[in-house]
Amino acid sequence: MFRRHWKATQERLTQLRTKEDRKKQDAFLEKVYKERLAQQEEEDEDEGEDWDPIEDVLEDSRGSFIGNYQCSFPRWHNHC
Image 1 (cartoon, rainbow, N blue to C red):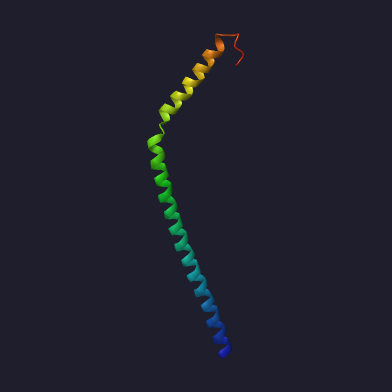
Image 2 (tube, one colour; image 1 turned 45 degrees about the vertical axis):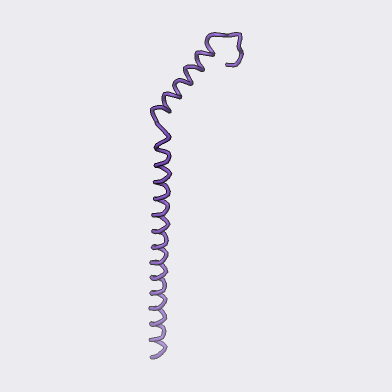
């Protein structure tokens, strides 16, 4: 009878340890996740001030226009 209760107690303790470990791991992962989100938001705020998508598109179109313009007129320059 004692062995049967001992086995049941051991199984219960094993389950409780597993459950406790899972809770600790979930808490740790949640903490790391929140830290990473905060860090990413800070990076996004820093980038948001420096980068303008409209200016980026205009810069690309200006560069291609100037490149096409330079290549179309002076044919004696062989840089195109």
